[in-house]
Length: 248
Length: 240
Image: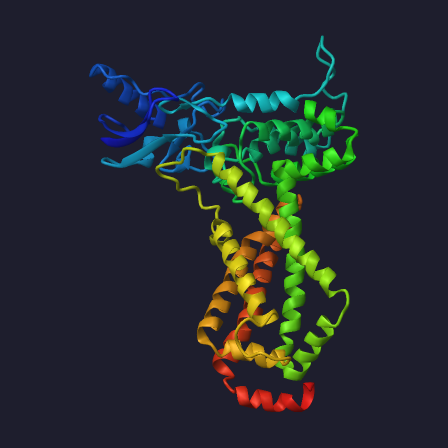
């Protein structure tokens, strides 16, 4: 089938960008969205044109590297799926699809559809860690954790840092990401010593990167490919309020 | 981290940092909003005395204005409004700045509600309404002058444009609250798998009740119960 793409092309952060129309031929339903873009690039290279820049790595939905705004939806129309898990069987011959980069001040554009998401790394580095001894791994069951708490922490930790929450948020807020990272430690005994310091530092790092405020529009939860829940944002709010009051 | 370390021992600095933070700002907006909801409930309860009769309504208004603590309460109310508005505007400006280049196509996945989409618009509508409302009904700019507040209010409601604007504005209040109440709870960190669905419905029900309560007054006294003479005749013997 043929797919008409309107793709954001921009040489670099300083150059002006615009949507450019391409028709990709030979698309089959089994292709992932990224394989369809690979096909476009093969066709562009054959014509001697500059191929489209876009991010991807594992292509199995666990790395958080692919990040496209497809027809105004982060990672496209599917629920709890990354861009690489979106397949062309979702589309039919002749469909017109608009593809844009994730937009946020905290995610400066590098080229075409590639944005720099190292802001997330800096937020994580500000407090998303626990203090532990180095050397050999300790006995796994030395600290007993109730099953439901372990599950909740694991649900939060399943965040892959793809940035869909920021992209989908009308305010470009990073609260769901920060909430997931704060929660995964706040729920576990290993996270308790740095509990207050962590949330204060990660909140500060988040604001410093220029992400917006959460106004509870809940588009982040709807866009999250890992199903991170809003209850984590409520926990972040509680943790921040608590840390503001009790930390010395 | 450094700022936290510098802030550590100085509590005024801690408060300032809280108010400047994205989360702290939201918590203050939510807190002011919930307190303003409390005001709406008491205001509506007072207004509903109009159905009891002009005498009851005027007696209530008289008791209110003769209370020496009223200016203090009014100052507090103005303070809450200002806090809510100023912090909301600052957050909105920061949110605009957080996405300097917008999307050509932005659809989302259906989580936004009519209330959440229009918070800024309904907020501005409510502010405009409050200014007109206080000017016309409290300070009696325009309309029938005199100590009989009930007659004064009925005079205004007799003007269909005023009544329609009143209904639209309290519709804006309802829409604002349809998002605001449940949003404030989430901002305070109240989110529980068992209670949150019920709390969201309760927030919506509260918004609808506030709208219906306020909107019923101009609809009834402006369009249905069009007997200004009858009302004032019953009242004259009473309040004065």
